[in-house]
View (cartoon, helix red, strand yellow):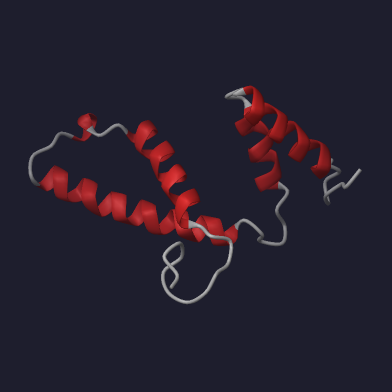
Length: 105
């Protein structure tokens, strides 16, 4: 057992997340959320920075579309959020360097 400060078995959560991903179980997010909550050392911060950069781009684009007359209700936030997560995961190479998170050179 690899407990965190609150007693969460991190190894078991990671294994459960992997198994849920392999099964295609959409409840895998529960295990991911628990692991993120247990992150007291900031290990997920680089990914969050990459995602933050993507979210900023998206918000700016949404503002442009709304200014051009696109109704806010036509912007599908849930699908876009998932898409941003996927794009951030692709951006993130795990080796932070210099420049914008997720776009390091």
